[in-house]
Image (cartoon, rainbow over all chains, first blue to last red; front, side):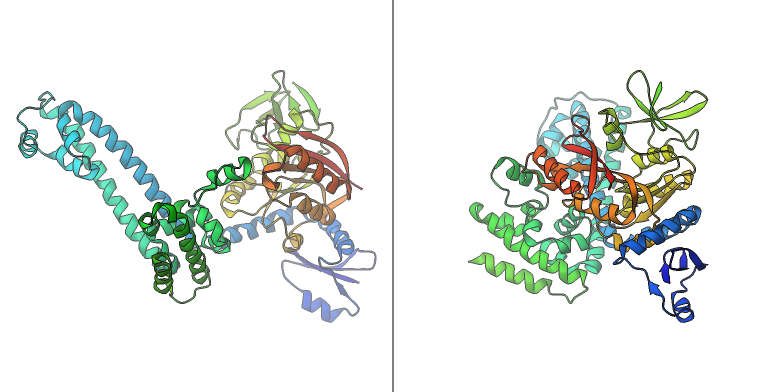
Length: 301
Length: 219
């Protein structure tokens, strides 16, 4: 006799693989094992018997659909881990940056018909917004110019630009909030990665990897090149020069290094990030400061 | 409009259609068309390797009414919805996918159709999901993994009935990007021939770049 249990329930089969007894909806394996002597449990190692049992399951179509839908919903629920929220937050920050840049560019273009000197003298975007709200006369005094190339217009022409500037300002605030939130999230989920890579670069790495688990499984050499996939595949495919860094290029220590030593810097940092992500994934102690010191020491000589 | 395979239609412009299992409802904003009293759903060959294979005039697909299907690499369920159309209300599709994010979309689609059983599992490890399946008549695999032919054979050995058909979509780029696609296809072919009978194969260029589809029959 054979015992087969699956998501639907437990089945006792006779020698000819016909159902002798069954219990749906619960795991009655132990009960049947006690009740019947000389019974063999079917598992994945005995494919022939398993296939014979699987034939019988064809009769349970609607149960299979119902049960699998139930299980999959629970599986999807359990698959949502906190590190996914890091990924969403960093992607939001990226999107906000894009939107802010786009709108500011438009505003500069628009405002320049009215007061071109403001855009010319203030290259900083966030500061520029302040000048949109200022009276033209005051701003001209500040710039030390007497005449403007732009025509004077009544307030109704300026107001729409000012309200747009206000919206952009609030987007800056939104971005700041999200960065703070991202920092606290990372302190909780991956403090070691944060300590070495920094909040934004660490989150970016996580976002490309997809999750902390995946980042943890990457070797350091992969971490080093995350964000440089296009260059990497070009290298493999056509033999172009291989990339030395991806997202890590923006890291302070890489930026600080001499130009011909940046690859080395990226390699050393990636090494420690890879280590840190493993510590974080298995909820180890905080060793980020120690690792960062090691990196700095290595790069100093 | 004419029928080329069971429940698969082609119109004069060369577009493919399957009968809509849930009339009036679309899955990915595809076109609906009335023909002979039934509602047909257009099947976009650029979004589905199975449709692309049919467009390339594959000689047989081995998929029929009332079939039970194991679909490996279901993704959001674009092709799965058409397979569900083809097998009809008495058929069954096990839609297996490893990524929870895309499976979420599939679950919403599956609940409307009543012949799809979604499963979250890694196709590479049949021993983690064999307790959720039954024996099937047809196995379709579309996953971008390096050992995709090995995964296919493993699943066919366990779940495909004798004389059942299997279809494998090979993405040469995910096996080895530095090798020529044709070389990879012949390697896959050799591997498949050890355990299956190859009925037909078609390269899917230019509809799907660097893809090849194999239709096999279990010996």
